[in-house]
Image 1 (cartoon, one colour):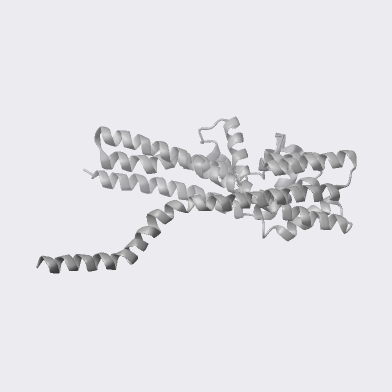
Image 2 (cartoon, rainbow, N blue to C red):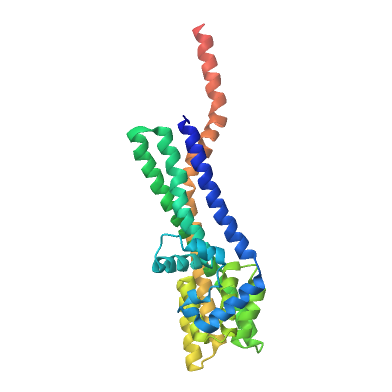
Length: 306
């Protein structure tokens, strides 16, 4: 009869292999034929792909991914909501949704089954279920952190992108040309914002109306600053007002907000450093400063006792 530890090891190994295989399939599919993927994306934009909104902009998935997605226990509406969340985290395409769904299934097994087998009995069942619940919630927590990190990166890079747009507009470029130039120049400094602007440019080049492309940008990012920027650009496009002047005003406001956020973080650092100082630095400091004196006092008392 196999030992519980061996059973747990085998189950965890198979679950980890399944998760790694899904992740490897996602990476391979994302790297295959970039020209074909761009062509499919342009076709999907032109036809609308039968879906409204930013989901229609996704490239055509690989047949293997489509086959795996058919076994995922999620309804089409749930998959659409999941793909929107993944899109806000910068993970486009059906492959990312499939990998996330597989992770939701595998993670509870990887975490819960070893705890159940190692502890055993009623306590093992209780802690195993609790560990499985943590494993089920873990992919969602990680995805939420990725979404928040990407949203913050977009917010931090927005003022610099707006400054470059203003320079290009005042140099005589159109708004579309300015967006393309800003995307080329700032993609390395702010990759999330560069990806979103690149997708915006792809939409407009494929014939999608500029207002609709701006709305899709807002839907993909779910960022308040981007939402305000899109509303301002839509108004300037509708009423024919000066885009550069509006962008200059908005850039000043965005830069002020960024400076205020930095000042807020700096003000919180003092409070956040209290616990590391008390728990880590002060004990070592006390040992170094007071330790020799304590040793001398102990030696003196020992000599007096003799």
